[in-house]
Picture 1: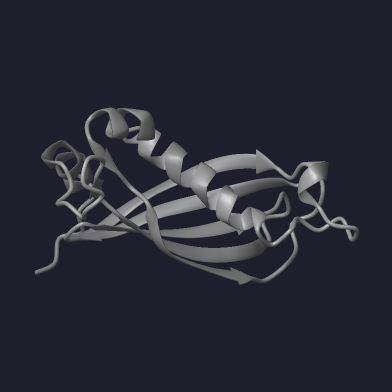
Picture 2: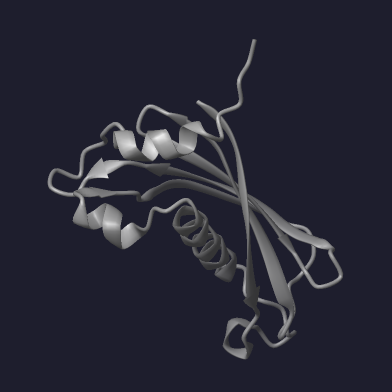
Length: 141
C-alpha cells in the first residue's frame, strides 16, 4: 500500500551531540530519525510501548542517510518523517531534516519490519495498524 502521511518533529542539537567543529556527529542522525518516527506513530495513535505490549515490534532492517549540510550546536531542527508504504511485513519511512533557515541538511530512509515479540519472526502488520494507515493510502487508477 502506497501512503501519503507526514509529520513534523522539532529537536534541538545539544552540545554533547557535536564534535570539535560544532557539527552534529553523523551517528546522531539515526537517532533524530528515530525520534521523528516514534512521534509520527504517536500522532497516528500508535506508540511503541503499546505495540510491544500487544506482542509485536518494529526493528529497523535498513537505514540510509545523505548528508547535505551540517547541523550545528543549538540549531533547532525540523524533521519531516513520511510513511511512504507498507509491503508485507515491511514499513517504509523517508525523512528530511531542515534547520531554522529552512535549509535542507539531510535526507534519509528506513525500512522497519513487523516481528512477533515472542518468535522474533516477521509478521503481517496488525489489522488495527493497517486500518489507521488506510486513510492515507494513495489511490491509483
